[in-house]
Length: 151
Image (cartoon, rainbow, N blue to C red; front, side, top):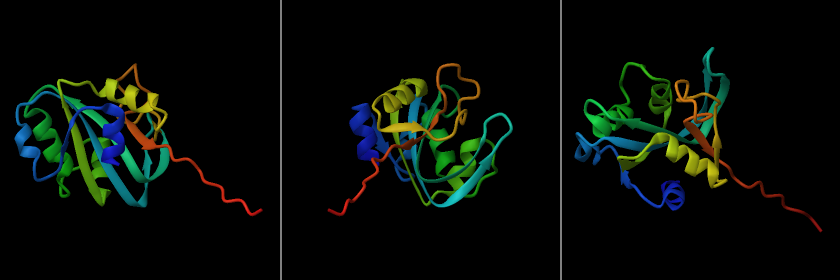
């Protein structure tokens, strides 16, 4: 999945829990790639309700504090207090990785991924309740459905 995202973005650096500390004090955006083996029911009054599973892509950004490094360290932790909506997904995920884009914008990431036709909003409003530009900052891949025909 990282290769597919990188092919669309054409830039960024892959990061995992072991290499995230190299990003202290770096402002910018990131793509958090996660996989949920089991369906997770997510419901919020201002967002919507859905059963989420499979590959999910979350675009985020940070300009203050510990910057990208601190934010991704939090995302990679499995034992944490749930603070953001994405925390519920990261603690349930069986796989986590990220691509970082120093100086980047989460909205530009969403536009590029959705604009490629390979990704779509996974849950309207998720991660973008304060964003007037994006329908969601949580995306899911669009897979072509294969139909095997018998002649």
